[in-house]
Image 1 (cartoon, rainbow, N blue to C red):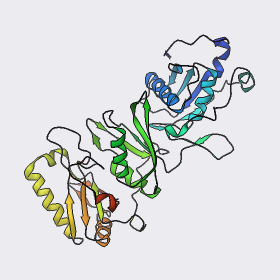
Image 2 (cartoon, one colour; image 1 turned 30 degrees about the horizontal axis):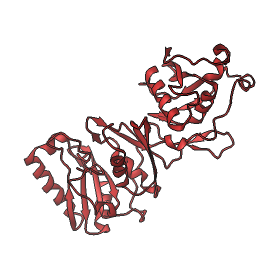
Image 3 (cartoon, rainbow, N blue to C red; image 1 turned 60 degrees about the horizontal axis):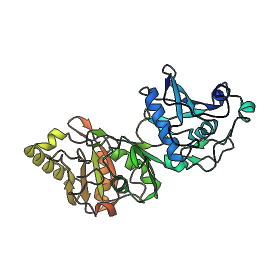
Image 4 (cartoon, rainbow, N blue to C red; image 1 turned 90 degrees about the vertical axis):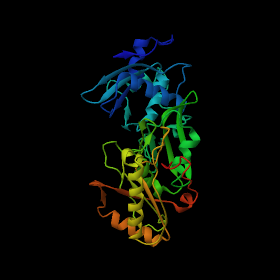
Length: 347
């Protein structure tokens, strides 16, 4: 057990309120430790407005059972423990189960403070919405996209621009503590059918010395990546095909190799029809982040060419013995593409 701060002086005896201040957290990732769990819950409680006992961190103690991947988190007040119940389903690498512990006594707890979360919590700040079920719990909608591992030097505007490369956002929230990024964000697209494309194209890209994770918020990190959308949905068919995981940094840094790769990709594009351009981002010479490295963008003269390329490449196309994934870009965004800008994984 690790203690993270002194308890404030309260009217009620701390021992008497202990069971009502404990929170069970299940589904912890193997990498979790007492410090990371305490910091995470302190941050998300601040983000939703769940800190009701004044300034400071709401988490007092964390005790983790690593064999069963759960923790008992002691909050500093009964009210804050009740507010924490609203965090059931919150994403911490995977979706967490936030419950009352087995020794929780509802009748006794009702005399010590609020037993239900405040209705005024801003749950959208952490990607949660109230469930319509009678259980009173929370659900993570399938349409919510979760991005983690975001470098702290990336601004909120840059993250939104990156995400908006796939379509307009209905909502966006970068989780912050005292106006500083916590390195993860949530968003929902106006056209939810592009969510899979965004996950496929952005998951695993490098930003500086970090690799970001992008997936649906209700998807466990151990689940397979969502399948790519097919062109059969004509509302998202475009003239642009994006190949991911095609090349390494070392291959792209070599000028002769890059020239060969560009010629090879143009010849490949010609197999499927007329094309306007092929763009292959390269690592920056100054070492600054290049978010599109390893991707190839093929813009065809018409949708038919992109459809044919997508269908044939998706049937098992490889490069250097490695499977290459394809995704589609909304053509209206790609028309604005500037190779000198760092957007949409493109540098």
